[in-house]
Image (cartoon, rainbow over all chains, first blue to last red; front, side):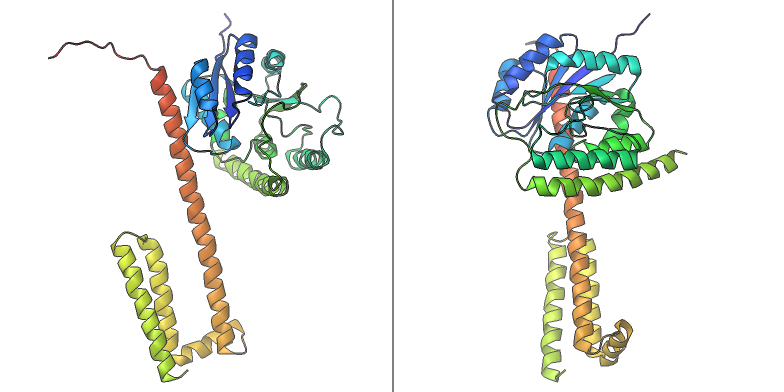
Length: 241
Length: 123
C-alpha cells in the first residue's frame, strides 16, 4: 500500500503585501492536498494583517532575518512536524503554483533530494536577464560545476522541492540565500540535486531583495561562503566516516 | 622616555585598569574581555617600567626604533580586537536569529495545538 507523503509548501515573505494574497490563493487552488506555511520574515508593511485575514498558517519572525533564515525556519518546522517534502515558493508571484505539481511528480519519480525549478535548464539562455544577473548566473553556474562537479543552470531559483533526507543538513549550517552555496554543500555531501524546467512571470509588485549595493556584495559573499561550503562539506563527511 | 612621561602613562594605565575592573564589576563588560584588557595594560606598564624589555621587543620584531615596534604591536592588538569583537557580534547575532526562529515556530505550533475545553467550574 502506498503511503501518502506529507507535503508542506513554504512561502518566505518580506514586505509582500501587494502580492501575497494572490500567491496564497493560487497555491490553495493549485495544491489543495498540500499544507501551506507562510514565513513572515519581519515584514513592516501590511503582510501580517493580510495573512491573518487569509487565515493562512503563518510563522512570524519578530525581525527581518533574511531569506536564508526564513527558509531554515520552514525547514525546522517541516522537520518537527514530520513532513516528508518541503516545497519553497517565492512570495512575489513570479512562480506559477500550477507548475509545482509537475515538479513534485518528477521529484517523486526520480528521487531527487532537491529538485530546482529552473528557468534555464532547457534553453541554457541567460540573455533575457539583466547584464549583472546574467554575469552572476554564469559565474555561479560555472563555480557549482567546478566545485560541485555537476552543471546547475539556475542556482538562484526560489522554487525548490526538498526531500526530508536533506532537512537536517540544510539546518546544520547558515546559508546566505540557499542558492549556489547550499547546492554545492549538498552535492559535495553526495546528495542528488536536479533541475526541472519552469517558466516565471515578471515581478508585478514590490522590489527585488537585491539592492544596488547587494549586486556587488552578494557575489562576493556567495563566493566566499561557497568555498567555505566545500571545506565544511568535507569536514562533515570526515566526521561521519 | 622622561620620568614625567612615565608617570603620566602609568597614571593613564592605572585609570584604564580601574575602569575595566569597574565595568566587569557592574556587569557592563564580560569578564573574558576584561582579562584581555587587563593583560594588555599590565604588559604595557611592564614595558614602560623596564626599558630593556622594549629594546628586546624591538630587536625581536626587527624594527629600527622602539617607537616603530610599539606601533606595530598596537596595530596588531587593534586588528586582533576588531576581528574578535566582530566575531562576538556574529555569535550574538546568530543566537538572536535562533531565538527569533524558535519563537516563531513555537508560536505557530501553539496556535495549531488543540485548546483544552474551557469550563466555568471552580474547584
